[in-house]
Every structure is written in C-alpha cells, then in structure tokens.
Image (tube, rainbow, N blue to C red):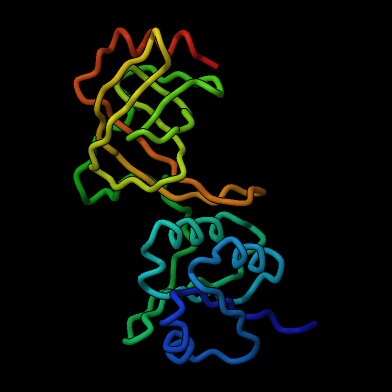
Amino acid sequence: MPASPVVMIGPPKRLDGLRERAGVDGEVLIFEDTATLEALKVIADRRPSLVVLERFFAATPRGAALINRIKQDPRLADAEIRVIAHDSDHRRTISRAPAADGGPSPDRPVLDYSGTRRAKRFKIRHGAELFVDGHRAAIIDMSRIGVQVTLARPLRPYQRVRIVVGTDPETYRCTAAVAWSRYELPRGKAGGHYRVGLEFNNPDVERLEAFCVNNEA
C-alpha cells in the first residue's frame, strides 16, 4: 500500500519557503490558500499523514474553518496538523481536542450574542427577509435582541452594521454589533459562507418579537 501523502497549503509566494522549512519527504501535494475546497476534497480522499499550513493562512477564517473540518472528521484522526512559518523557525502542532464553538476567544471581552441566555430564540422560516449593510442574509435563528445569520461576505467582530428586517409593511431598521463571525465549509456544498452572530443596538423588542413569532419555522 503506498505511503500517505503530505498536504501543504499557503499563499503562492510563500509555498517554496514553506516546503523548505517543513523538511518533509515523499509525496507532497501543494495547494494555494485560495483552493481550500480542492485541498479539503483531496484530504478527505487521500487521508494524508500530515497537513502543513502556512502560519498566516492558518490564522484566517478560511484556515480556521479548514482546521476545524479536519479535526471533526473521524476518518482523519491520524492526520497531524502542523502550522509552520515560511521564513522563520516558528512551528506548532494543532491539538486534536474538540474544536471551539466558533465564538470569541475566552480571553477577550465578548458581546452577548443574540439573546442566547437573555431572550427566547426562534427558528426562522426559510425566505424571511433580512439585510446586513444592504446584503441579503439567511436567518438561522432570532430573538428580540439579536440574530444568527449566514452570508457570503465577511464581517469583523465588534463591527457596526445596518440591519433591515422584513418587508413592507413590517419593515424594521436598526443597527447591530457583530458579536462573533466564523467561516464555514459546509459538507457536500460547492462553496463556503460566514456564520455571524449579531446583537441589536437599542432594539424595539416588541416589533422584533412579533417578527419572530410571525416568521417562526
């Protein structure tokens, strides 16, 4: 049986340095950081013994999503995930411990996301309208003080955004703060998305709760 390959992922200009620093032998499959979906498919099919990620790519939302997908796949339990700098001796091995839930780091201040404990959350029917800074978002769940959505564009934690909920005559406008944001690569889908928790600023709780009730899945 042939030996399992090594998969290496990073920005194009850093891949040569990354391979040199990694010091690996045998079959090495190299992917640019823009080809994470292709890399993930090969990782699932070939089950490499080692996945090497360039240091700064590993810190991006795409890198974090890739790491979490590998860690969550029991078929890849033997794959070592190693983060290496292309131009220094920095290197570390990612723990196989269960991934975090995607919220903010415990050592930084947090916003209270979308009423996880302060208000009842409602699952919202598919097709209910919500826009973030003019971009359509899909609602996962919602409360009178916050909402969890998925959308195609990235948002930064603590970023302030404009929200439009619903359509005439029940349109409601407000602002919100990004409590947390993470990039996801859903299994079996062609592309990724961002899952975001938003906390409304000075919400009209009666109108928002009525929207939740009227659009509950």
